[in-house]
Image (tube, rainbow, N blue to C red; front, top):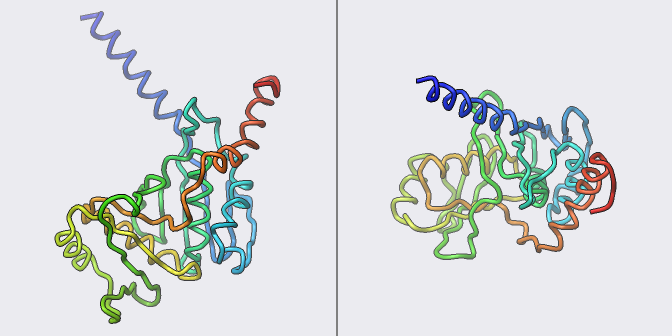
Amino acid sequence: MKQNLCAATFLLLVLTNAIRAEEHVPISIQGETLSINGGATKLGATHWAIPDESWRTVGELLKTALPPGNKEGVRPVVLDLSVDRKAPWGAVEALFTAAYALGVPKVRVQFEKEPAWELALPGADATVGASVELPVYSGEKILTENGGKKMELTAALLQSLVKQQPKATVSVKSSHAAQAWAALTAIRMLREAKAAGVAFMTVRKLTAEEIKDAQQGKDTIDRALNGGLNP
């Protein structure tokens, strides 16, 4: 009995340490302003319009807020992302790409007073297997398009889509200047509809060299804090 109690206590300590090991980094995108751990940086619409390039700037800002990674480069951290109604989709795309390059496995998304939900990075790969494109437009309501006709994007519509294409990856497409909450809501509803896969990062796939370059600055800081710059 005493041995079982000791084993249970040890397991509880292991689980507690594992939970504590996962850090949370607060991030918000309010309009064109990106805030990481409370430090705000305003970047213009022109910057967010090209996430294929702007993710590097975001990565430089994000590096120092992240904990060290493991041997595989994965960092035990969750980005707690809060977006307002004016946040552009290009800004969120840039953040997702930078986070993925730096070894962040998931993001916790919060929009206004809606329940928060988690999103694994980098999402599904629409170039592998069957895929279907879902255009998303922001406005007073979230809209999509089919055969040149725009219609409201609802949970029922997405459930029907998933039922018709149960094995397909749904690729969410939205303008970089569009309001991010629309694309994020579409992603959430697709997850709830149990789509086989959801692709949302339209930035081209990063090469191993690009990921290494993105992580280099943070890795250098880690080594310095641990007593030296030698690998």
